[in-house]
Image (cartoon, rainbow, N blue to C red; front, side, top):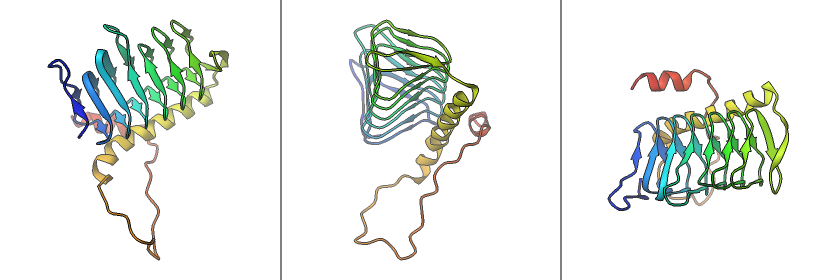
Length: 204
């Protein structure tokens, strides 16, 4: 964890079962819960307000999380923040997803099980209803999500929860090969197991 910094004497708190990539930057008043995943080049700046990632949430590559002074950013349990998204002074409720390169502004609330489409702009103060899809610039409610779509989202988040545990063992610095091996194998990617997180966190 090379990119961990105290700010004004406040040190980030990271659960031992969370995975924070060495190239992520975590500053100040940041609290990262159990089985969370923070990807490379993500920036969590807790120098203005507090940032809280609850159990099993993920912040993927190149995301930025920040806020105005004294305003918290909270990603609740099983929250899923896609590649390149920006969260600023907002709350993402349980099992909600913010799509790739979307922006969620101050005092917005993404409802439980809701999905923010890729590239959307959620304006300040918007309240996204639970179980809905929002998309567009500015974002608007498109429709209710089906049970199958919510299950699809949960499966994707479950894979990242497994990745949080597997990356701690599998990720290692390396020097590149000059050419691929003749018998080069494929990476074994994490598989979805709905009981995996419950089993792993029960060990603690």
